[in-house]
Image 1 (cartoon, rainbow, N blue to C red):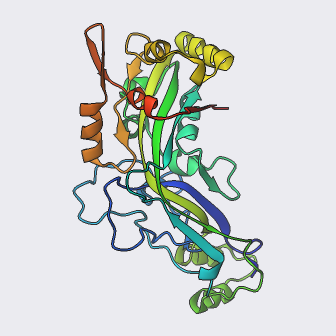
Image 2 (image 1 turned 180 degrees about the vertical axis):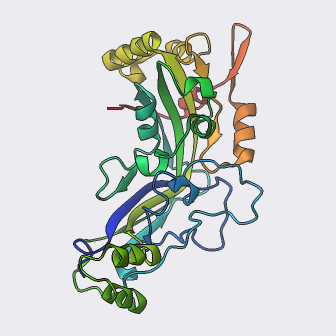
Image 3 (image 1 turned 30 degrees about the vertical axis):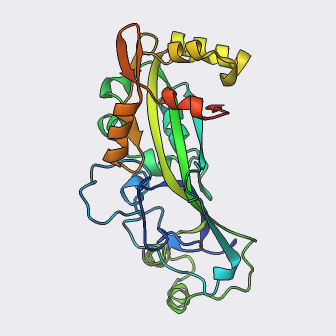
Length: 308
């Protein structure tokens, strides 16, 4: 079975959430390159199985990346993969970026922009297809009343990378399957959907082609259409780095935005969120508010993207 043309498709995870303060005795990857998982089992609710957006489970003793097991498919592929850890003391590996979203659909897409699931044109729907307004708003850190209606959004995010892994080359056709996987393939009957579904349930639908682990702090700013278009046109003209510090704070202030969301940690790390609420307060004309923009001065470049 050729890896590219067989039963498995590639799954690229370009940011799986994990705690800033995590200190594992071993690499965090149940993730391992080449391992298989079933993407379709919880399609629309994939965030239940994969830690990519905060859930209220921080009391758990064991921190998880995948709740369902991942499993090896091919034998002896370690030499084909490469991993790298970004853990040099005192050096921050990451970036600061903004996503400009005309509507709620684009906001969902922006949060999961770095996820690629082969054969899915809209991979974010694997995570958000089952989101109702209440739980979507909670995950994104905004009030429910602002997830519906005629609003636009800016997603501001600070990302810290910790470990990356990928295949160095395309997988060769000569790879040997694990014995139990090979046995289950032999049980598949051509044209019989039930046997194929059973295989996917027991083995998986996609294998992990590359990943980046780390964590992110993010904040959603909600705007009226009019104010959003004003910011968008200004940035298209000058670029985000062409704005003055005063303009940047004015455009992302509570008197210009309809709503400032909470600063959330993708890993649901409450320690980090408390730190953000305490350290990222900004005061202007006696008005105090918490904004992730206070971190932007630490970055030479602010990346930005207009969602489509």
